[in-house]
Length: 168
Image 1 (cartoon, rainbow, N blue to C red):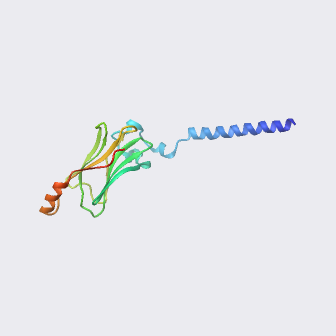
Image 2 (image 1 turned 180 degrees about the horizontal axis):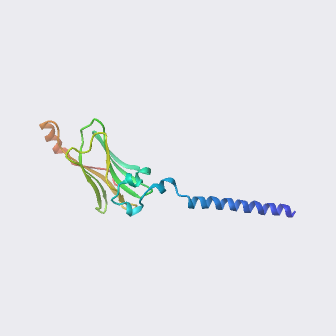
Image 3 (image 1 turned 45 degrees about the vertical axis):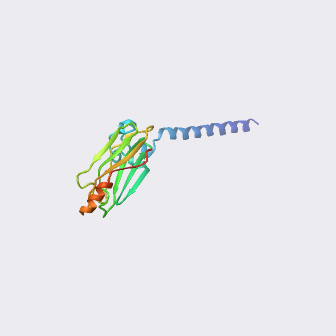
């Protein structure tokens, strides 16, 4: 009879050891992505999302499709940051921003300014990050007006303005 009791005790001890090993592994082994980022939280504000590794797990929360481009609001769950991204489509010379911004509801802003030609066709550019686990952030692009024709330039300049995403 004591053999059964002893086997039961051994089974419980082995089970507890296996569970402890699983818990220790979950706690001590960092995820591959978390180990690859070079900042976290407020230390990421003002930094490049690609250079820091924060862009690796980023998702697009909001976007606006334009003629020849796309404005995105990106979020990194690992770094707890947001930033604006501009994708200028290849072969299009339509909407061209002169400034790209990520704007927090507190007014805190991270921006980049383009030269007179705007971003090159087929390129993707982005703002520095804003640490924002609580406050809302939106992406905004200030579109320059202009066209190859005088009439087109006049009409375009009447309708050009800021384009922004919904805040998240």
